[in-house]
Image (tube, rainbow, N blue to C red):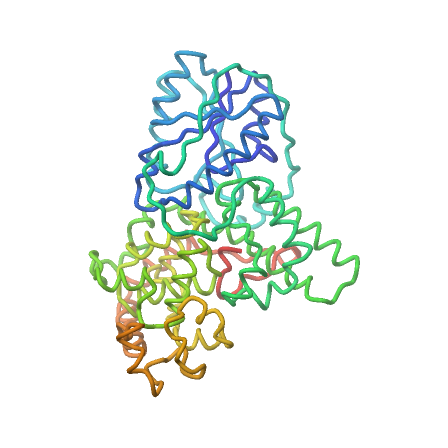
Length: 499
């Protein structure tokens, strides 16, 4: 029996592990629900609900091919051992996964089990991340080649007669409801619909609307949770985007589509660029990328500041609106993700790990490689990126000029005039609102930013710091793509991680 172990690749289309396994014999498609994983600090109720919906879709897709998805609850090694003893495991197939530290350790245990029992484990690359990468030179060109390869068709499968098993609910896994009343829906049909509507309808204003938390909710692709859990492959997204670019070019359209698609195509490339960082340095989930910043912040966070930030009660209206919106929807546009993390790290001076875990739980599209790379970038601990300390008041004025977004999520400020919405402490009636319906700011954002900037830059002095930074650049920094390639736009100063 060829066991295909589904992980973050919950689809049948463009699934090379499934296609290759079917060429070797009868296939048992398997998903292991691992209770220990779902007890981790970086996973949540909303994650499992999205995954469960996607598993239902995957089971139906596999059933249409001849053999529905088999689900088992337990430790992955224990599940594989029971299968070996009952039906036999001639080969294990999966896509390569760059997950969190727990899945990395789990895969080592599975590898040891395979070696002990003579079971070949065939791990197939899924997207542009490369295992055991010696150098970033040529990485971009390799990404292009990989994405241009033919999309693999789903194979016909023979029924195994094995009981498929139930898909547990979040309550079965003892996950606590987390208030995501408006999160995105999982499953292949949802993924295809989101891709199609973005490329033909919603994406026209992508380039100019992506920075707005209000307009971006529609203009951004919203593909990120589907890419994170693999209900859509990166190759499918890339090739559909390129096809749409060719169509727009042939039409000679000058209505914004060309620029929007160029920007989006580039960001698909950068998605894998950031996951590559975690693949090359798994420690950045837990430790500063540049060790010069070790000890600059207390490892144990200020509990009151962390809780106020997480609840959206910092007294900084735009920050609070973003956090409340994220808690309810599971999504936030790229610039606001950067801002809320920067406020936690700089203005509140919290070590990035605790707010990073909070955001991981809140993002339906939590992708460990992108997440921890960006958490450190927005906290100033990479040692190579520009220190970007957002002014939360200015961001509110710039990105929510009408105040509609802020007022929707912070209704306590209903009596504050528009001109003072982002700085309610300046309003004449501030005393009737602040400290009563809405909290006073927990920090002076201007002085907190100034202090943080001085602390961060003070570390960047000296030859030792520069030597380590040079090593980080050599290992992790991007390389310019060849000019002859036209499918990717140059990366913007701020990356649109959630697409």
